[in-house]
Amino acid sequence: MPEREVQRFGGNWTEDKLNTLGEYLHSYTTALKKQPFHLTYIDAFAGTGYREAPTKESDTCLLFDEPDLQKAKDFLDGSARKALQTIPSFDDYIFIEMDPVRHKELLKVKDDFPEKADRIKMVSEDCNIFLQSFCKKEDWSNQRAVVFLDPHGMQVDWATMKAIADTKAIDVWVLFPLGIAVNRLLRRDGKIQENWRKRLDRIFGTEEWYDHFYEKGKQENLFNSEITYEKIADIDLIVEFYRNRLKEIFSGVAKKPKKLKNIKRSPLFLFCFAVGNPSPNARDLALKLAEHILEKK
View: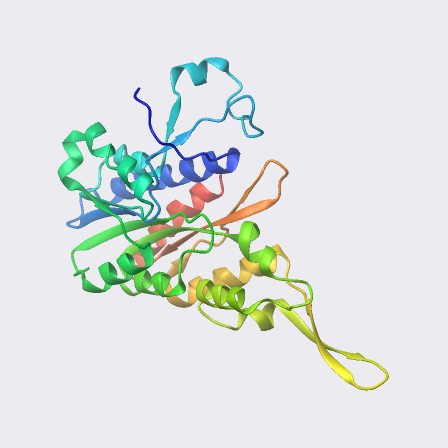
């Protein structure tokens, strides 16, 4: 295999995430293969298309105990390749990657899947800008899509989630930066710098998170009293708040999003599923498929 630029991911949580996605994509295209819809898969952070297998020197090699695995396959498939390998296949694929180095490497997937090359669109643009425009301009009466939002942090704006939901035709898997970013920004004393407050406003789509996550109090001293704030939000409260926000705009949201944890069992991300189609049959089927997969260990 030729040398390739790869993304280094680690731990069981990455494998868990990609297996969950891959299983859903297969179930999705199978369920809709006889329906008269044009099916599109959209990967908003497609990266290089590859991820690197952990090595013995890493702390994330627990899945790869057999030494022959590394010899047999130096690179494991990322989400883009998972989607391209899905059978039945999608009609179109849109891979978004803004980083120029990764985008250049990503172009090689067309060489590896020549039979699908003319159905693959590569986008080098901020996914928020592209998706908001794409969702609004397309005619969704005869189209359906799955969007995979796999940011490295807090890059996905709520406006993008709203644009996706407004199509009433897109299922979305989103990796919410629960412990790796959001919880870390929530200082115990509530004194969050302005730029981070704005970032939290954008990811939640509201300023109301502050009143949910902090309790107002009063501290007395010799001269006056001072209003204070104390963090009351734990991981579960943040999960509940974000899931409720999704329920406000999507027709259905999986009841138990999956907490993806590191090797120390600390939650890094929340893997959420939401469905846009308001039709009871379509909504309930999508939720049933996603929740079954999410419940697997």
